Length: 270
Image (cartoon, rainbow, N blue to C red; front, side, top):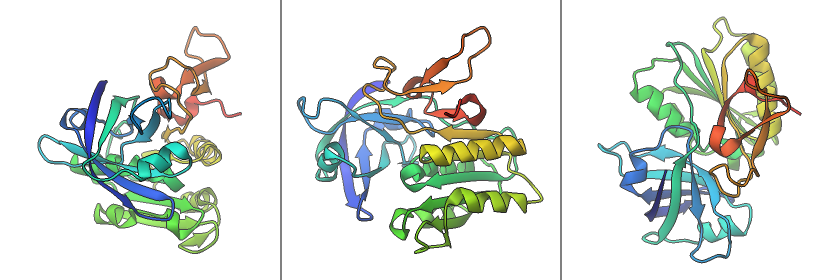
């Protein structure tokens, strides 16, 4: 974990609510693993007081890596301040933090599932698997409310992913919820995935975990949570999980420390 300033390389609006930011910070870039995150101070001083958590979207694979990207949605004052920042400005970062995704144990079908801004950590994972020699095949199911939510699709296609799109309003791809179409698709597959990676809203994650458990597919879920500190001190991101051997129930894990990536069967879904 490092505390460093990073130079903003670009901060581009890619849809009405989504922004794509590039950051130059060689020391942090060299340490980031897929699925880890950063705590970002969006403005100097104490207003806003708390840092904001952001997934690492992509790493620029020069040798050694020196820069990386974030994809974020404007949802409040903090992210609005971030969206207004210009190239060459500086951001203070704490990270990389948390436990990330693990690679599959063997080659085979790799399935990724994303809901809305849940797509943010998956390109780094996808690039890492492809560059590490995994042959797949690779499939991404990506759902959003409207077509404006479905960003960076071409990047996955360029990596060799078969991409299936779903929108609630039917403006792109199939209409409905991504989990409904995913369940139907899985029931038609001769080969089940070696692993399901997922990131998105809590209700979607619950359905993905239940689906994976029912079919006997290992699942790794990047959980979203409000965080005050990012290092396990404030306990604001507690998630109920199955207790380890010898521990008492109820058992809670911190998303920032023990996650954000969890085995789907670890989580006790309320």
